[in-house]
Amino acid sequence: MIKQSELRLYQKYKQEVVPELIKIFGYKNIMQVPKIEKITLNMAVGDATQNQDIIKKVQKQLMIIAGQYPVIIKAKKSISNFKLRKGMNIALKVTLRKAKMWAYLDKLISIVLPRIRDFKGVNSNSFDGRGNYNLGIKEQIIFPELSYDDIDKIRGLDVNITTTAKTDKEAFELLKLLGMPFSKR
Image (cartoon, rainbow, N blue to C red; front, side, top):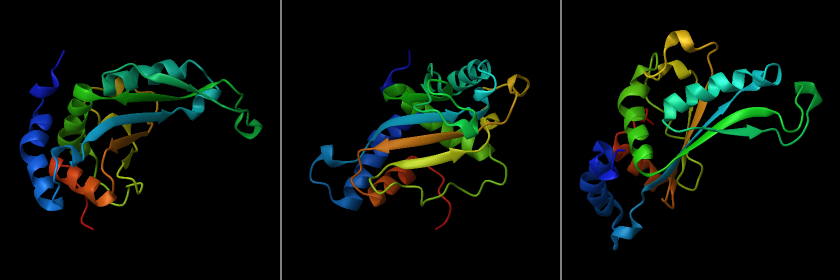
């Protein structure tokens, strides 16, 4: 298992990002410096209402992407227009923390995002007002671990980066200093 202290992005955070954030925002205590708490990956599987076997294939894909086994999310109520019954499997979720989180974020920033076709940067307006960043990925095939032959259908996934920042400005600076390729405002 990889130790958190051995990861490249974590080292960058400790040695470069923390001193820079202290300089920019004038924190008096190192504990005030924002950090990344967790990364949550969500993948909806709408066609699982017709065929519940699809959820197993998508679960395997998300496990390969995240490096951790995903949790199945069940429908909370029935909706007849969508042929959805309460208790059906409709989505998958993975929460990454510590070393796996840093390894995934490093892979996302340096390998995955540049593979997007016509990539001009991620949207800098996707903060939620509390210092958390949400990113939507339209195709799971941009992840290099997935084999193109194993994918039956193109699916998107949501990446939610939860930080301890109090404001969006602090979170923006944190992610920008870590190397998140934001588009020009």
